[in-house]
Amino acid sequence: MQPGETAEITQLLRQFRGGAAGAESALIEAVQTELKAMAARYMRRERHGHTLQTTALMNEAYMKLVQARSTDWHDRVHFFAVAARVMRRILVDHARRGAADKRGGDQIVLPLNEGLVFAPDRPDEMVRLDDALNRLAAEDKRSAQVIELRFFGGLSVEETAEAMGISPRTVKREWNFARAWLRRELGLSVPEDGQEEDA
Image 1: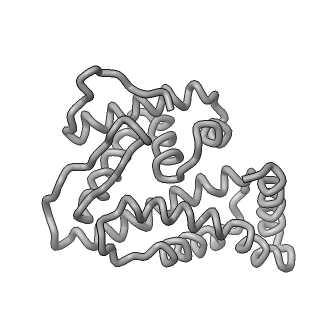
Image 2: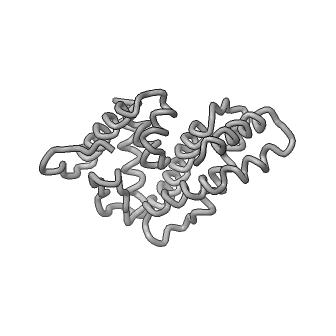
């Protein structure tokens, strides 16, 4: 996204919060493509045949975001960080409902390259990951936020740093720590060389 588009979304968020006429429809048009891409990233990590579709996830998330009209949106990055959290909650709630009758399943895959890859076959895997992230947040809130923004939100290292007000180097450090913590918490193997990647 270009700097001009970022500034435009920030301005639209402020206008929307202030109740300006036409701000909501302009905001929908400005964020729709990126919200859909974010929803698609989430759905690629879900099991095949998931009953919730990308467009439905995007629409439900958008409805929840606009209901929070009073939110003090700082900028585009803040909006999409909150959108990531909202989408995660929608999917976890959906998974909890679906897991009521289904227990067990394969482990979550958390490889070193391309960040975390989440490819569960059953809805309770999303619940396991969410529970682990909540435990991580209780121990280290910043690391859990980095996972949420990068893995769930699809934000880059730089965007995550901007959203959190920390340096990109700190984001990378927290990212590596959080992935290692999740591997241990979820009972996954640690890489043989013990190395973590920086990006």
